[in-house]
Amino acid sequence: MDTPLPENAGELMADLDLDTLLHSMARKDTFLYNVSKSVLLSSVQDRASILYRQAVLADCLAQPHIPRNLYSLTLETLETKRKNWFGVYTTTPSTIFHSSVRMLGMYVPYLERLRAMADEYGRDCTSPGFRKFFSMIQDELRDSRLAQIRKVLQNLSNHRDITFSARLGRGNEVVDQVLRKPPRSNRTPWSRFFAPSAPSYTFSLDPHNDGALKSLNAFRERGLYSSAETLARTADHIDAFFTQLRLELAFYIAALNGADDLRALDEPLCFPDPLDPSSPESPTLNGSALYNPCLSLRSKKRSVGNDISGQGKSLIIITGVNEGGKSTLLRTLALAQLMTQAGLFAPGRSFSTDIRSGLFTHFRRKEDRTMQSGKLDEELVRLDRLADQMDPRSLIFFNESFAATNEREGSELARQIVGALLEAGIKVVFVTHLYSFAVSCGADFGGQVLYLRAERQKEGQRTYTMVEGPPLSKSHGEDLYRRVFGE
Image (cartoon, rainbow, N blue to C red; front, side, top):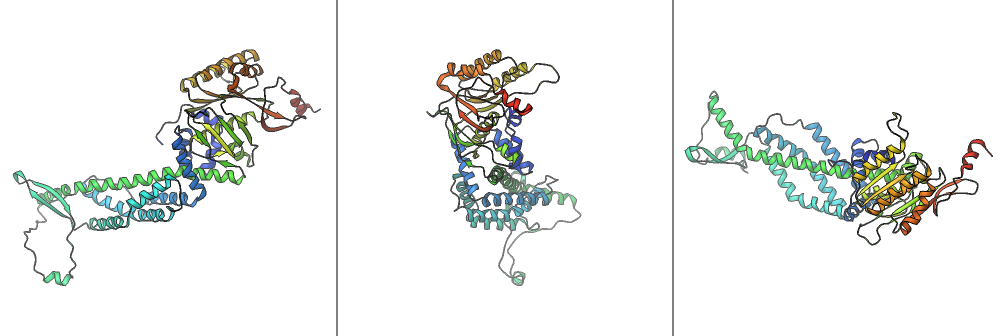
């Protein structure tokens, strides 16, 4: 959670409508929202880590009661601490000692419940993540260890029987103070009263002798120092454990929430195949029935899915009629990439992509009302800033960029910029109405290009489906005319 978000996080949030997906995952829980946002925008670049998360999530989706019960336990534990723990306002060893004992005593029942969950759920999970976690709990919280913890805390809870051993050092200074277990005896009080006492040397302090009492108290504090430090460290360790467990489970609880909402709309979900950058199949961007989850969640109904086959393609050009679903597909592909590299499911029946070091968007913006710059100037300044953040393994999505100038200039700008990006190893997905630019890409970049076109039926109806095909010179302005003026 302390990892800073990428510099372009704000643009990704706005361009991809991520708030819609995050609110579905969070269910009005601010903590879940922040965790989901942090994980989603901090893309994992290691295939093994992505697959590890996917396996844990598969267990969660198959048996949602397991993560939800574990998460409830962590919330209950931390809430109990919040209600019953007021902190330590003095830093003497004795106050730290006794407050830590109380805190540990408060945690023990929750540790026992966690151990019971590990016994119950450990057999049902198949992911390495859950198996390792439950195995650790069973090993660390064995019955003998829990019994030992309870016994030690019981001994330490007796505020009156504090027993030390010590010896006299140089100059008769007290050294080597060690806290000892209080003496225990199985004899009855009657037998102890009449039993012969062991030889010992004792003395009592005058209650009015303040100096002697201060010296005795200092002796007590020095004797408790080491134990107090150990107890406080132990209590902090257990507290940090439950805090971290809550954090890690929150990601999977949020994923379950999002999956539940999409399943309720009968939308398909799949576990994507993330390809290592060094894979011979890279670059690739393949999928079937891919849809925009944010659009589905906002409209409360199923979205039209699209198939894409981008094996070996570094540049995807999407053209076609207005309101045909081009920008929706662009967001769909970007969201699928983000969700894949977060270790989540992907929105579709299947999806595979090569892992990228960063995801960037360059969408058309509204006119600058302050008139400090023109639209084209603003686009170029923004792209210059993004170029400083990208590296050769990045992926960038353009949505009708460079359309603020005329066709010839816009096409030439787009052609040179895309050429430089491809030469650097950056993968590009570009939605455009610039016909000259779209056509020139086929000639300039050859087999690297995949052309997709928004389908238009004979009477002008939109199916919101993309088909493979070169760009068309005709813009079908008559469709807009009919809509406004009729036949």
